[in-house]
Image 1: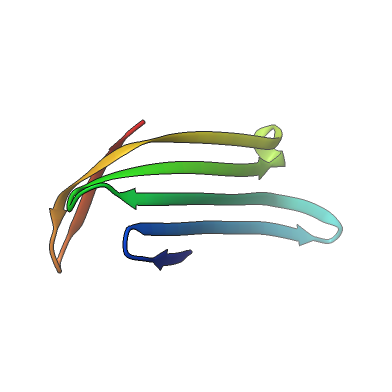
Image 2: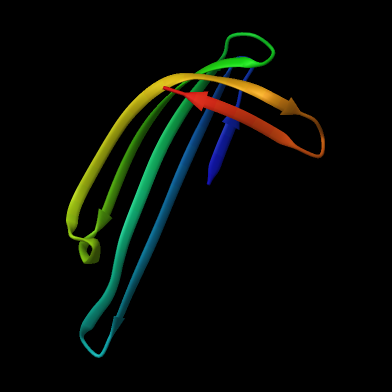
Length: 88
């Protein structure tokens, strides 16, 4: 996971890979990548976009793409807990 915060923008990049091969047989092959830009509209309200890619041969798909966007609201914003709700 990578995250970069600016004055009004936050960019979040997530990626994972899970691959296992033993004795010439592949038993696990999963890849995931997501990019989420956010813009702060006010102290608690933000807009976001989301683009995702998944590959999981063993669950029956070579490629799955998703693109979405919407708004979010920070319900709790403290040192001990951050909680946001998103709808889009």
